[in-house]
Image (cartoon, rainbow, N blue to C red; front, side):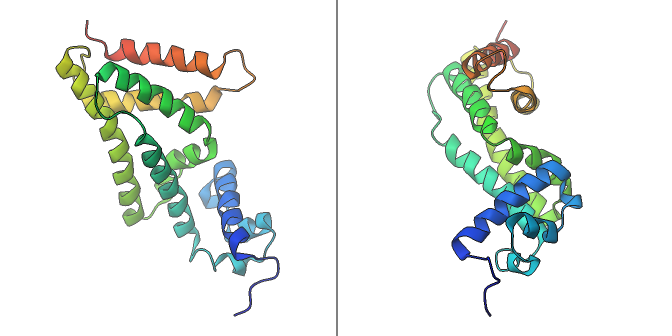
Length: 196
């Protein structure tokens, strides 16, 4: 079968993913058609089906890719050592990683509801892997006597929610530098889990 005019294998696939990410973040998954994504890319709608079988698969692949990148990048964090130092490294990492990917973060939370059950289960499992990493730090800190966390799962989810909030308001040209924002958040995270 001949390739659609304007479609190039090494270019169209990545452009399709970038366009879908932008459009899903801006307008929502339900409001964006494959035809609209194709128009953004500059190809006919049929050309997209060489790269994805349907819109659901495209959404799933965007969310899965985001989580796999997050988990791969997290591997650079220390897995052992004092829990306080590991928690600080996690806090700073989480803020930096997510600030560089605002659209991916937005759809990762807002569009989970649009995943079919089997796709949701995969993404939920990847998210659980990330949350478990933080829970382990909190449990270790509790065992070391430096943290006092009555429920590590709730504490991990609360900390992640607080850190994710930076994406909604931080601006590089704003009042505070990224280093200052990280330092303030680290201070709040430390105080939130500190042993009395």
